[in-house]
Image 1 (spheres, one colour):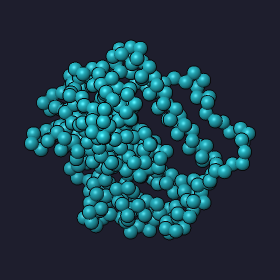
Image 2 (tube, one colour):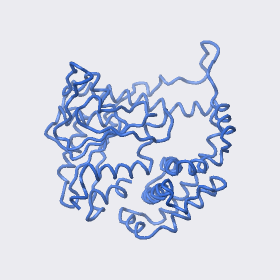
Image 3 (spheres, helix red, strand yellow):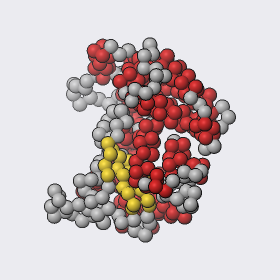
Image 4 (tube, helix red, strand yellow):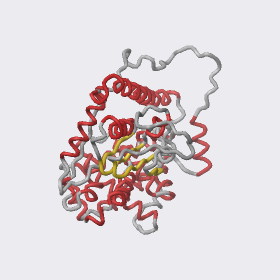
Length: 379
């Protein structure tokens, strides 16, 4: 998605020149000495009467009151908010996509998001909002995408398209449709709650562990700490790789990544720079409030005083989802930086990891980068 959507914005002469670096530091992050043995197992004696509320009856009530059936979820979304239907379908499909279909799925996602955007503006007569059910909706959507394949499709192949990728991508989308249809009837089962809680529990404990591990490493080793050093090396590489054909260094930092990049640019490595910093679902404002960044002094007047943004950052864009409990704003803490709300449409448990699976996110990011970099004046 980064290559397909941002390539034409950041590398206008030749989008294929876009370089994407993705520094991985998880192997030097949190470690669990007992292999997450603190996860609550089944069969533990209850402390008292279980007063929990089953989600199934509530979901049934919603379906009954709105007239929406389990096999009409996407159709209902397509009618009310077209981009939500595309985002939901592609987010689920992307979760199981492998390398062969990833490029095709990304390209189709861009096409579908554009079609949904036109439908939302009343400019797309091919948008299948009047489909009888989700199966018909997907079939008609795929037909519309196939009919619209012209120059855009050939351009997508330049980004590494693989033979048969589109066919595999279609299979992923049909698989995703099946998962949407099956989700509603099973939502209230205790077995599903256990299945759902395991990844949520693991993600939550991993996040807390990474926060504690990073700040402990920084306290002991400073700029030489394993996590900070690895991210700093990627920033150095990004600066080194800037060329006239690929002139911008745009840093997109998700969650804890935003805290690490801010800490580097403001304190550990102020010699580094970037043209645009995009923090997504991040906690920079919260960590600053807690006094954990050396570059941020406590305000004398919280209503008036603001912390300075790193001088080495050209523009700072911060994206949060109101449903993402791990995302925070920066505008009320820092003197520079723009906050933007973006709804993934996911619930409290899954919103944090949903941003980068949604085609509409990349389209909106591209629009903001055009403004932030004043690309038109350079094109």
